[in-house]
Amino acid sequence: MGQFGILVNSTSFFFSLLGFSYVVRKLGLATTLLVFPVLCLTATLVCYVHPSLPTLFVATALLKALTYALNEPALEMLYLPTSTDIKFQAKAWIDVVGARTAKALGSAINDVVQGS
Image 1 (cartoon, helix red, strand yellow):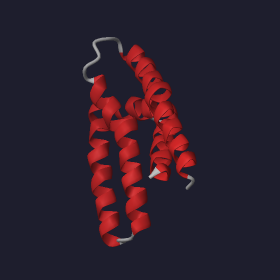
Image 2: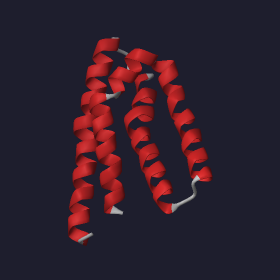
Image 3: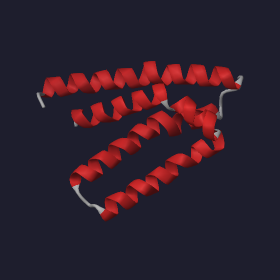
């Protein structure tokens, strides 16, 4: 379980750090909100065509990571009453440094403690 947390939070961290603002700037907020359902459908089809535990593990981890790094921040941007530039800067910083770093570190500590 620790490996799952490490994969999810590391992927989410790097996507939040390097990809979220780029995706929102290129696609716009409305289209960004449609990306996750399309990726969810794609992951479901991949798991249906190639049903195996590693495929399901990776698909679930990537979907969970993109929930944290793409879908939730995009939804939360709808509620921020400020300028677009400040939204991108503040939201990315909070998600990357705060939530993702703490969860990735917690998962790594859990993995070490459990000895896997």
